[in-house]
Image 1 (cartoon, rainbow, N blue to C red):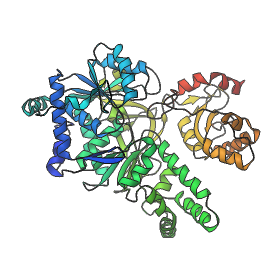
Image 2 (cartoon, rainbow, N blue to C red; image 1 turned 180 degrees about the vertical axis):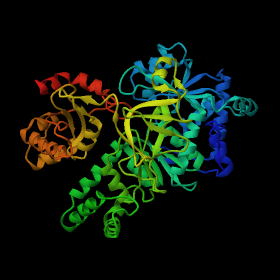
Image 3 (cartoon, rainbow, N blue to C red; image 1 turned 60 degrees about the vertical axis):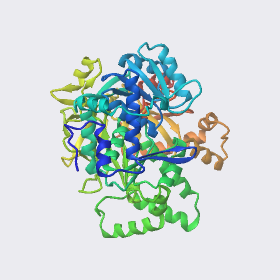
Image 4 (spheres, helix red, strand yellow; image 1 turned 30 degrees about the vertical axis):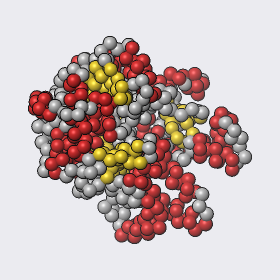
Length: 587
C-alpha cells in the first residue's frame, strides 16, 4: 500500500485513500457552529463536478487558477478539481497587499480566482481591474452580487474527459505556483511539480506516528506549502482532517475534535506556553509549588530516558500531577505536533515533550516542497535543538561557508520566468538554502541562522541574530525582538513587550498602565527589562551581548508589513521604519 513518488500526481492521493481506507469524515469544516463532514467519495465526486464546470468555462491544461481563502474543505476540493485537469493552482496569501495581488495575477496570467469571503472578494476585484487575464471570480461563501462556486458544479460530471486529462498529467509536470516574497523584494513564483510535493508527502509518512484512525486539525495557511503538503500526507495516511473555524477558535476546536496530530509554528507554541505559565502563576500554596516544580523537571528533559531512572521517576510524577492537565487542554490525544516555519526554542521543545505532547521540529523551504528534515518519536530520531534527520531521498551537505545545500526529488523546478534567480540558488543540482547550519553527530540537522542575516560589528565580530532572539524570547516579558547593530560597536535590540503580561506586572507595581506608551516609558519598566536583558545575555560572548535596547508600543505583524505571512521578521522593513530610533541608540 505505497505510492511511488516518480509516478504520483497530487490528485492520486484521494484515489489511494478511497481504495485503501475511505473515510466518512475525510474533510470537515464548521458551518453555523457545527461540523459538516465530507466523505472521501463525496470529496472526489464534488471535485469531478467542479472540474467539469471549469472545463465548460474553457479552462485548459496549463491554465492558472488562484485560490485566496481561509482553510476549509472547499479549498481542498477546488485544489483537486484544478490539478486533475492539468491546470495549475496558484494559492495566494489572504493578507498580502492589493499590489501584490495584482502582480501575482499578472505575472502568472491567472484566468479564474476563488475567494472565501466579502473582504477577499473586494481585494480580488481591485486586482482584477489591473489584471486583464482574469475572467471571473467565484466565492466559497454565498455572497449577494457574486458568483457562488457551487454554480460551477455540474449535475453530471464528464468523467471520460477528466480521465483523459488525468492520464496526460505527468509527475514531473508543474502542479502549483507559489509566490513567496521572503523577507525582501518582489514576490517570486516557486514552481513545484506533482513529483516535488508528492515525494515530500510520501517520504514524510514514516515520521508521522499516526495511522488511518487518527484525526488532524488544520489552521496554518493552506496557501503555504508547509500546511498544504501536510494535507496530502494526511490524505495518504488516512487521517481525517478538521479545519479550525478561525484563529480565535483554535483552542476550542482542538478540544472539540481531540486530534492526534496538528501542525504549529513556534510563535503559536510560545503563546500556548505563556498562557499555561500564567495560569500556573495564578495558583497559590502547594499547587503553585508543584506546578513550577514540574516545569523545572520539564526544562531538563532529554528523550529516550537519557537523564537516568531517578529523573524518569520524577517525570512520571510530574506527568501525572501536572502535565496531564496540559494534555487535556489539547484534547488529550495528541501524539504529534509538527513545528515548522521558524526555529523552535529548545526549552519549549523540552517542556512540551516532557508533558507527553510530542512537539517535533522540522525544517524546510517553499523551494523544497517543503520538508528537508524533521524529528521523529521513534528510531532515536529526536534530538532536541536540531530539526532531526533528513527525510528519505533528500540529501544534505554543508558548504565550506556553513550554508546548507539540498538535493532530492523535492527541490523545485525553478522560479517562474526568473532563470537568473534560479541560477543563483540551483548549482550542479544542489539547492542553496541561504541558511547556515551543521550536522550534529553527523546526522541531525541544526539551523543556526540565515546567511544574509548574520552581520558584523565594527570590531569585525560576527553576530547571529536569530540565535540571540530565540534565547531572549524565553523571557515572559518579551513577545518579539530584533537584534540590530551591523557595523556598530555592539548589538542592540528593539523589543516588543508581552503587553498582557506587562500590564499585569504594572498593576502590581502601581505603574500607570492606561496606555502602552506610558508603560514602556516608565523607568521602573525599563529597569525591569534591563534585568531580563542582563539575565539572557549571560550565555553569549561579551561581543554578542546586547548593550542597549528600546521598547516598542507596536507588534510586528503581517498587517503592518513587518513580518512575512509565515511570521519571519522583515528585517529591512523594520530597520527602515525605526531608522531614527536605531540611530539614536548609537548616537
